[in-house]
Image (tube, rainbow, N blue to C red; front, top):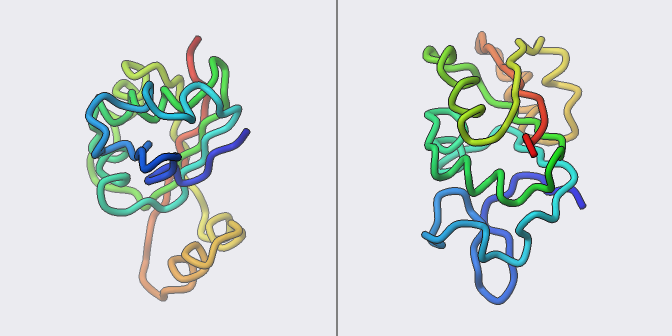
Length: 135
């Protein structure tokens, strides 16, 4: 099972959003430990806060959606304070590495939002954090 842009998915009204409203986290969600792959492309709002600030509790809830060893990919516009993210991801059980993405790579992603950002005419820098869930 792959989960893409994991905010607000669940059953029976439960939220698996990394920012809540389920304060107990994804462990109580029907999707806990089911994902072989987690992809977050160009998040906004609370999901962006979870992956870019980063928020340890929210990262832990994202990790809880994944099986041990699951692939994880997070793509967003580069912010000024990126150096702390790899260690924060590691503390949440996500072994991730950052790499810069070219505008061509962004444009090739299969989302309308990628096209809007990639062809916006504004200079932008994007990054991808890629790795695995640590068992």
